[in-house]
Length: 418
Image (cartoon, rainbow, N blue to C red; front, side):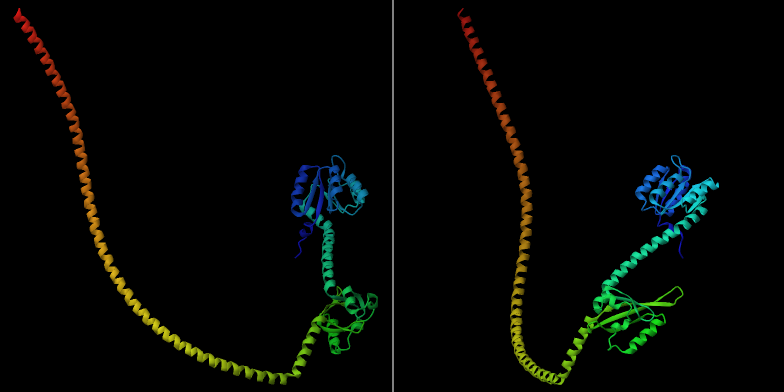
């Protein structure tokens, strides 16, 4: 189901309101339903915006009373410079006939009585903008149709006829393929390109289908202006009025001449080959028998050679296995010998390790003893030096005593003389 608000979402508006409270109230609605909203509180600014954005603006909503210029003066100037192509809605709290009459003279689509009620407001917006939305939608549809038409014209033969089959339209591709100009085709019956080789039953079925309002699809052989044939895959559509009555026919044909001619060449080639089929079959059979015999002979020789090679390979394999077994026994013996040697070496290494440990302990003990002797030698050396000093001192004392005794003896001798 179509939603009327979808029509509004495609539109852009210019909104002029000097009362900020009223503007905020309406802008909350406008921003949610319109594609683009241009807002200004003054008429002069609105005029400047309109000058640059008038191609994008679909609707002007303006307050009648503005601060710098009235909404009526604003729209009057826009109408004077740009005409009456833009829809206008006036918002006013003054409902006297003079104001409303001025608005209507300026081509106002409607007016809104303030304070604004959104429900009433939305109804007015939808009513005013529906035709604009429809025009935009038609413009888009026309663009799409033009693209489809260009695509069809570049690949298909397009034509239209009235109910009697008289041609009312052909595209350039139709003229190129058929060899006729548009002037030669228009107003002529479509059977101008009918080829006599096409069975009449095809055309009876075609007309019976499209006159019932159904689409016909099929292959047709046509004839060019120069008499040559061309082949098409055709789709013919009945065009109906609003009461489902068929009023004309439109056909789209794709040129498949190259495809048909290629198929004919293949068919002719097959016919030519079928005429000599028996001879070719016999020759091929004889050749196949000869090839099979040669292959069997070669295969038999290959089997003989392979058999001899297999026997030789068996003898060689047996000899190799014997040598391998002998070598295995020798290697096993060597492995056993070296295992014994390794075991003996392991025991020897254990003894050496134990001896090393014992020598290490003895070395440590001898090192301690050497350290003790060294200390004792040092002590002895120190004692010997001390004894020497004592001896020297003692010798000195003795020498001193000898001197004293000698002196005393001299004195005693002197005394005796006296």
